[in-house]
Picture 1: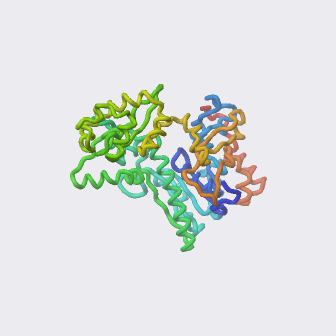
Picture 2 (picture 1 turned 180 degrees about the vertical axis):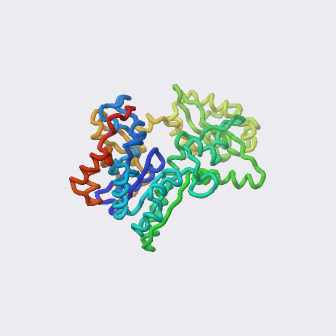
Picture 3 (picture 1 turned 135 degrees about the vertical axis):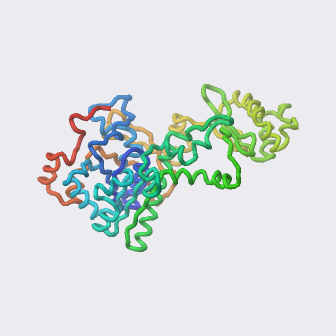
Amino acid sequence: MAEQGVLDGVRVLSLEQVHALPWGTGFLADLGADVIRVESPDHLQDRKAGPFPAGTAGEEWWNEAGNMVYYGARNKRSLCMVVTHLRGKEVFLKLVEKADIVTDNFRPGTMQRFGFDHDSLSAINPRIITLSSTAYGYTGPWRRAGSRARTVDAACGLSYLTGYEGGPSQRASPNYMDHSVGNNVAYALLLALYQRNRTGKGMRVDLTMLETGVSAVGPAILEAQRGITRERLGCAHWWKAPHNVYPARGDDRWIVIVVSSDAEWEALKGAMGRPQWAEEAKFATALARWRNRHELDELIGNWTSQHDDLELAQRLQGLGIAAGSAMAAEDLVHDSHLRERGYLWEFSNPQAPAVGSRVFAGRPYKDPGNPMSIEKVAGLGQDNDAILAELAGLSPAEIGELESEGVVYGAPRPDEARP
């Protein structure tokens, strides 16, 4: 994050939890926006999620979780306040007066019950942008349904399309939908800010996890209208062969090889030493290779299993063949390409000093004019006093009253169960 990022001066109030929305608002925080994570002492599951130093929650576990550095509270400020309390609501509405954006990921109807729906907030601040990130949206028969990434992964069609050839459907990814939605949150808010700068008016954004997922299966939707059913192929392709993940030398090491033309097939045959089987007619054309792909995959796997995945991938790339190692997370931490590009960010969390410096994922683009990094990670309620004084205009005595009345917190309640 630059000393004065491109979004310096933009303020976001985010009633956020879990993964998707915090990931999206984290983009804005990295770009210099003042993102205030409004947390509830009744919902500390994010801060309980870990991972924790040495796998064990410490004395101040609520500030030690690694996921809070990854996306939850990095480059943000934290206000831990019960917004459903009458005084908490009053304070929140004061903050809205000086905010540009309010986001939430509650089920539809919750913000209206709180009195925080768009119409109510825009009456206080006509320039306010509100965004709700929900599973199914604010309209439609499924609008009140709850969800997690796994269920929407199924509802949007991704699970149906994902699976090995001839096998059942499988989950595409543990949190593919969360990251995809988070990316869309960032895009939508940037577009909303651009639109407001043109018109001077705030706006409402209704963003759904379902539609984010459906947008990823567009070709299948077109094919369905032509009576075409897309079969599950695992890591195979509809017409390319070889196109798969093959075993490499070592324990659980793998390499991906994709051949897209006859010229690339000739190059791969050369790399393999032109074995006799590769010259057979059943592998001579793209169609023949595809029809005999199972046998072809087995033969190629016998060859790749004798080679180091990284070395072989580099060698095949030199021959014009798309190939790559199936990198494990441990590989990525030390990957020279990512490090040279400055993608990996090192950060030592002062909230968990015993951990020391750790490597975190950065942002997937390079913008020299707006360099980014992890500058801070907000502890639970760490910024209560500053936010309440600076933005809500409260005196130290008034802030003390909120603390004594159980409206704002700087730590979990004494009876909060440890993770």
